[in-house]
Amino acid sequence: MNFDAPAGLRQLQVSAAAYGSDEASTWELWGSVDGGRTYRRIGQPVRTQGARLVVTTFEGSTSTPLRLEIRKTDGGSGRLNIDDIVLSSSAGAATSTVVVPGTRPAPAASSLPPATTARAEAVVTRRDDNLALGNPSGATASLSTPTNYLLAKPQYTLSYNAQRGTPNWVSWHLNRAWMGSAPRQDDFRPDPALPREFYQVTPRSYSGSGFDRGHNCPSADRTTDLDDNSSTFLMTNMIPQAGANNQRTWSGLEEWTRTQVERGQEVYVVMGCYGKGGAGTAGPRTTLDNGRVTVPARVWKVLVILPEGSNDLQRIAAGQARILAVDTPNDQQVSPDWSRYRVSVDAIEAATGLDLLSALPRPVQEQLESRADTGAIR
Image (cartoon, rainbow, N blue to C red):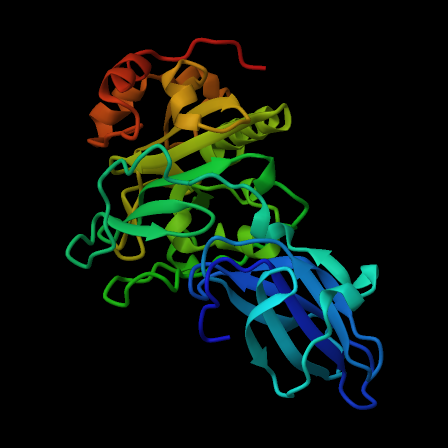
């Protein structure tokens, strides 16, 4: 589809078969809620059953416009015959029908065998706003602010600095709805959402530098499906990070955070960097790629941790959250023990000029941001 179906869909029906005498094929239905920029699989893979058209029903709900894509996934040479696609706003009541390419109406949902019904889990799973704690720099998607350019993705939101070639900050939410079994994609690549007027940092920009392509939003925080994981390998999510910092200190903090989620917590995370000049395995550097990518001096993160639930901002304001801020040097001498680098949120704001946790009332911010966490790490 090169257009969006209206919001409020409750049921999707797809008629599919093998084409003529071709061998059976496996296909998947994928959906996009951001105009086709990114997709997430809906339901489970479907295998054709000969040349007879079989209707598969995907049931769920979406409060946003939805764009669909059908993907043949088995790698074989058999062709797919996709006939009618029926989109319904309520069970059994079609509001719009896309015919590709036939004219045969789809059978009623009540006539379908149970085996053809798949739950559209990716559409209905609850995932909170990645920017729920506020926009720390007031970033906007305007070419007039190239050092504070807003990129909002389904998986995370960031402020990009085109002069530094790195994000100023990246914000995301983490709970069990974001964690699954999708494998690490390792498909580092330029971000196609970046305006063409901005220089495109590529994986080659880091080659031979002695610095890792360090994730802000980690790969392991986005494992529900392949698209989620792949999104974390966009170069707008990367900073030049010393290997010891990335692979030991930061990895330890990320694993600890996911352990909290496995224990029933949810976490709001904001991460960024500041300063100029770090030391990697090849020694100190201030920039990479002929000055187009700045090596930061410091790497920081703020975690807001609370039990899974709703009305998160109210619960945070009521003192039900643990606020943990970390600020580490970007070098090879950094300690593996990230807890040694705990600071207050106020300290990070003073170093970066950002307004963190800005969605909370000002008196609450002042109370929560002034203290460095000293609680047990377990």
